[in-house]
Length: 310
Image 1 (cartoon, rainbow, N blue to C red):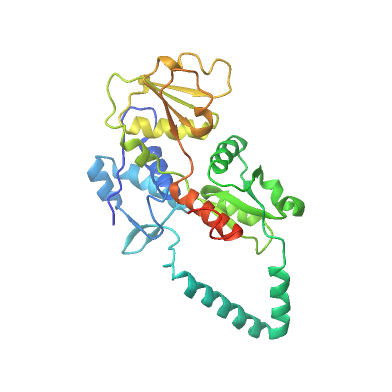
Image 2 (cartoon, one colour):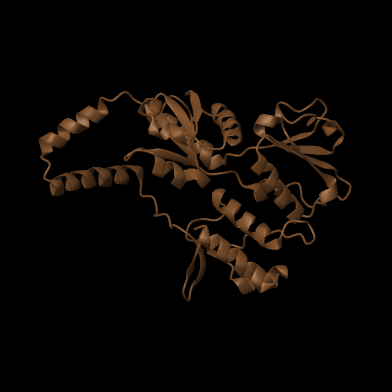
């Protein structure tokens, strides 16, 4: 069991229970906490961070209700959904082909029928663009901007309604963010491949800016409201005083006013290019390095291994 770093700030206006829940959820979405990993017990967290056990227990219950964690009797608390170890690519491909043949035999499908079907699939026009399916329009704009800086294929965006449109899905590499995986998978037709992208690690990104200078005035700016909420919880828990942080939603009247007088402005990657001159911007990418690597791997799979370096 790794010792994940948690931050808690008393009298910050954000309940300690919410601080713990937020940090665990972000840890899972950002791959700081792996599927099957054991979390500290209620007693361990309460003792280490001087929290009331009821606070920790309530947070864990909330996380269990959200299907982020699971309690195993006699073993402890674990992140849900263990991932299987990945075999070598060649062996994995052979296993997939063998499994396909076995399933065909069990269904009573002849070799020649399966061969004809495979020829039909191989002859299908390959995907020629990425399509991000995300219900939150503000978040979509940010993530699409980050994707376009990584891949060479076109990137389009749509809400959940697009999953019902065969025309919209045609020739698309379907993409969803980690926290919307289940909703998107349920809305898509069967047998649709979906690329799931994890978020970047907020604790890791914040680490180099800690401890917080006592006289630093920090701005947090984004057009995505949840960015502001997550940043507020994490910064207050990390030791920044609420009076030293200015929160602005990009796009609202006068949102740029006074930002160039602050020590630094933490923002999403899309807002960074729209800040006034003189700002010390600290852009925070929403997509993790593993997410960008997955996009490049998929693009290489479609276009060929020599078209773009991984």
